[in-house]
Amino acid sequence: DKARDLEFQISQLEVKLSKMSQDALNLEILERDLRIAQTLYSSVLSQWEIVKSDSSIMYYPQLQLVAGPTLPTRSQMPENIVQLGRKL
Image (cartoon, rainbow, N blue to C red):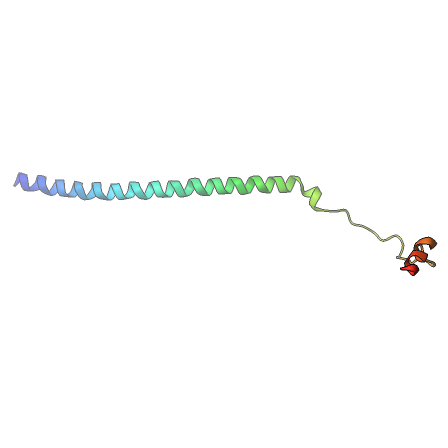
């Protein structure tokens, strides 16, 4: 009777040990995933801080048009270049 109780306890402990081994494996996988996520988050955060500190480069000051565009009233091209073009 006592031997049977011990065998039953042994089988229960073996089941618990098997479950604990599986739980330990799952814990290792979760810890690895956590390390990867933390590294990725840290990298993205560092890049964001760089972009945020360089935001003055990304934003140009607003420009205001002082005068409308105009075209010259006469040709700005030197006369000798015009004559050269006519000869060609």
